[in-house]
Image (cartoon, rainbow, N blue to C red; front, side):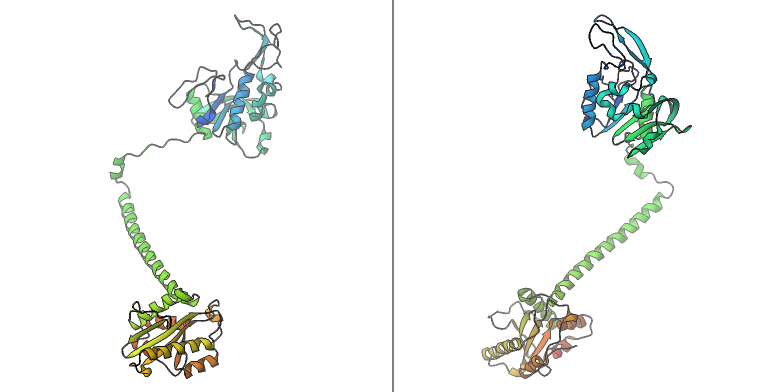
Length: 413
C-alpha cells in the first residue's frame, strides 16, 4: 500500500510504503494507492522567492509520474483510494527550517486544476470528467463507508466498466475497469480497507483446509451417498472395461474388413489369417517359392491360391495366372490326385470403390474360371463366409464344400 497516512497499520498481509519508495507493482496481488492526504495536495512556488499558486505543480509530481509508469506495465490488481474533500494548500512561503502555506482551497472547489496536478496519473482517474461533490454513504461488506465525492452517471457508457452504487440513492462510489478499481469511499483504518477489498472482490478469500479427521465424521445422509458413489464407481469401472474390450474387437474387425481396400502384403496377411480360422490350419510354415501365394492341406484336399488387390475388375490374365500356379503345383506334387486339388483366386477387385458400387465379375471371366476348374472368391464374399461361420450359420464342413467347387467358377452367397 502506498500511503502517507499513519492510521493504516502494517500487517502480515500488507506492507506500507510512501509515495517516494514504492516497490514493483507486479510483486503483489493487490496494489493500493491512497491519495487521501493533504501532504499530497500541496505545491511549492516555481522559484524559491515566489509564493506558489493553485495551478503550480504538486511537490510530489515526480512520484505521480513514477507510479503512472508502474501502472502502465502492471498486470496485477490496483485499488486507488481517491481523496475526500480535504484542503489543497498553496501560497508556499517556507524555507529549509519550516513550511508555511498561506492559502488553501477545498478539493471540491478546484477540481479543474487536478488533472494537471496528477499529470500522467490522471489517465487512470479522469478526475475532471466524472468526479462530482456529493457526500454519501455506501455499504461495504458489514460496514458503512463515507464518501465526499461520487462518480457521474456518464461513466455508465464506458466500455467494460463495473460500477458500485450506493444502495440508498444509486450514487456511484466505485468503478472497476480492466485491473484498476477506483473508489471515493474513505477508509479510516485497516478494517475499513479490508471491508472495501472484500466488497469489491479484489482478493480471493483463502479457504480453510479441511482436517483429515473430518473424513471420519458421518452425518445426515453421508453414508448413503458414499455407498452410492462406491456402487457407481464399480459400474463405471465395469463399463470402462467393456468399452476397452469393445474397442479392441472393433479394431480387429476393422483389420479384417481392410481386405476390402488393401493390396499386396497387407491384403495377403489378413486373407491368410481368415483361411487359418476357416480351415483350422497353420499357414506360417508355408514356403513362398514366388509362385502361388498359399497352399495347404485339409483332410484329403489341397488348396492352392492367388491373392491379389487391383483397382480394375477381374481380368482373364488373373485367372490364367492362377491356372499356371495350379499346374506348377501338380508338377511339383505328382503323387497328389488333381481331383483333390482346388485352385482359389481371392481377389479384392475395384478396391477403391465401395463394395455396393463395384461392377459384377464379367461372365467371360466366370466361364474361364469354370473351364480351368478354378474358383473366384472376391474379398467381400470371403468376409461373408467368415461372418456366417462365426455366427454358427456355417459349419467348417459347409465352408470346405463351398470352397471346393470346380463347377460354378465363382462364390456367391
